[in-house]
Length: 317
Image 1: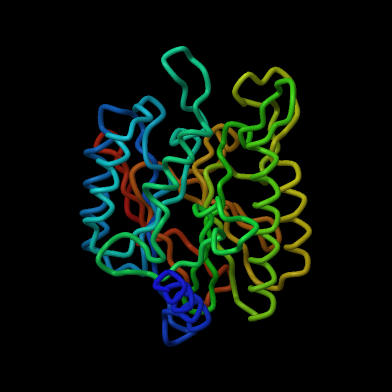
Image 2: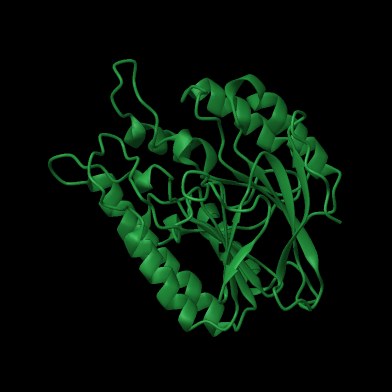
């Protein structure tokens, strides 16, 4: 009975925005995945401490670990403890390095086993990590998509926020013989998730949607990087078509926050690139503050970035 009550409360919270005054500006932060194993834990810990001191609506961690850190339960538990200790409400969005690029000692993919473990460890509660608990709506609350707890949505003021599992290894599309089951099943779930998000935003006449993902699904790719991939089939084509079509029927602004340096290697750092009503922002280590201002035409702006000690970016106030 308790899980059902929690879901009802979470749904009510989504219907009633967390920010009382719809016209108020507010800020949130995104912590990028660690750049390397040597500084992984230190940078994540420092970023959480720094964001704790800022006045933020929430913090989004876009990737749990660096590419060269182990895909181990021990490391997952270590990062989970850091997230639990945050003062702000903290939400986790997965990256390819967290699961899709994981391999065994024999260099065989263990992606399916690792994503299942991550769902058990990070995505079972109806609220965010941290002291300031944000109620979350998970796609797993829909019976047909019970696996996909990592896809979440929450609302603040007139903006809908959501995570969507799009790993930047070509969306984990595998050019191998047989059915591409993980990719195909998640593709069905993601398609339904995007459809529901845009229906919610349109029906409530919200000013904006923010999508957090590892990859930028709007970027055209010259090659794929999937495990065992040798062909040039692109794993994000369907997602791109769906977002572009939905954007035409939506009067608000859409912001895609990602960490896809493979696709956007030439993109301006810490700048939102706009095309019509869709913006894309690539975040780099360590963390970035984004402000939502309903009075602004663009609605979203980058107002600060804190880089690594070797490459400190200047704060844009």
